[in-house]
Every structure is written in structure tokens, then in C-alpha cells.
Length: 130
Image (cartoon, rainbow, N blue to C red):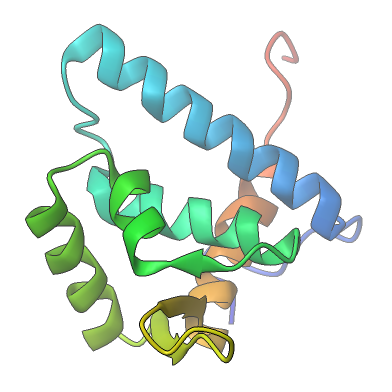
């Protein structure tokens, strides 16, 4: 079910995917600094990448920290969260130790699209390769 065909035989490990996700986040920040925004992806993609990295590293993502990760104003961050929820990429879960806080979790669908993208990104030839 990969949009770019079957994953390569040498599929990436989760650690390699995290490194690629972190690289994407870093490049997005650089684009934002250079261009004044991240026109390629919007805060949706940044939020998904940040959640992927956090989840693989077993770091919970609160709604507040997710809003900050988007780099957008809080109201925009909340809208992005709602839009990703509506698309089935993330879901909310109550913090078992603090009922005032809510965590966000990638769904299987959210994890699948990121895994597919990062696998494809990792399969691309390195720069300088003909």
C-alpha cells in the first residue's frame, strides 16, 4: 500500500526514520528562517513529524507542546490539531496523572504515512550520486 511502490528491500530502522524526521524538522525551520514561512508543508507536517520523533522516543506530546511545535499562533495550532484529528492521523488521550492535561498520539494512519514518507526519503540517492 505504498504510494511510491513497494518499500525498498533494505527498509529503514525506526532510528533511521527518526533521524530523517529530525532532518526534515531542521530543514523546515531553516526554510522558515530564510523564507519567512515554511511554504512546502505548513504546520500540519511539522506537527506530524514532531509527534513521530517524540513518540518513537517515548516522550508524550501535550496539546500545548504540539501547538508550540507548529510555530504558529496557539489558535492556529489548535486548528491544525483538530484538522489532523478529523483526518484520523492523531487522537487525544487524557494524561492519567493529571486530568487537566491532554496528550496527542499518532494513530496507525498517521504513523503509516510518516513511515511511508520517511522510507521513501531514505531510499533516495544521496546528493552527489549520479
